[in-house]
Length: 135
Image (tube, rainbow, N blue to C red):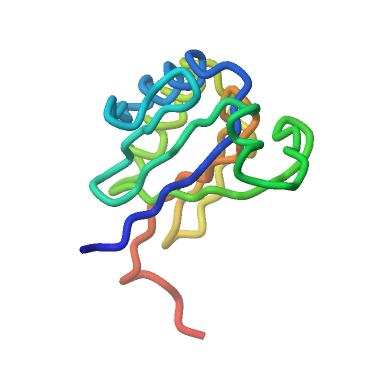
């Protein structure tokens, strides 16, 4: 069995969050979706679990941070081209997200950042590993 990654994010409004990620092109897996949470598929081995705050709290003794004002995690996802990075940011903005930090172009890597509807920080990038400078 291949290792799978499940990113668990606390959300205030499940339907609003699901709609946001569907607009980015991520599908919903109904097998792991109900009124308490939803499973969004990034690819065959990477998933985002959107959990309403009350349900999320059952998995931890820690206080849930307000992702709109506190950094909890930086989630990064690579795409196949600069154009795909720009397209993802445009979809995020159209779906209600925020273009958060000015684009960074390192020559070998192009990076943009958005905040989702709950304030979770996503970095989207394209990297040409053949162009990484040698140290």
